[in-house]
Image (cartoon, rainbow, N blue to C red; front, side):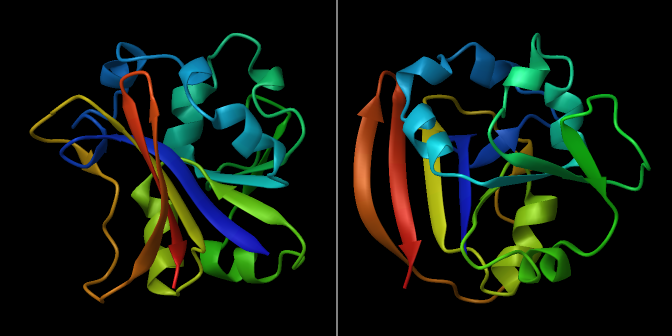
Length: 170
């Protein structure tokens, strides 16, 4: 099993603005300008929190957004408005531990899901695209405990206005 974080942040390290909006991202570029398609083809499972789900649930043709993966949303809700997304109400660390070892897991979105996995040394790869935007304030990507974590920089790519940094756990 490999756990991946793949996402885009601002140059000052924010996933979203202080109101959890992603307008800055939508106005910067398109997913077609990145290596998203080849990344997604290697994933078996997506895991996200409710805020991330709320951000994407109204996308046109949402059922085709993640068509080949099992898609889990960590939430207290018993059901979700999109049937392709499965609600999960438990500890994300314990849930990921029980996933089959041959699966690739994509952590989508925010630090609420990412931080506990980082705290438990369960994130194997971090792929960050950096948009040429400064927000000055917002929702940071990293909010794990203050413990040193080291990763190895494997590759740097440029996609349109985005820089992509590919890291692996040492």
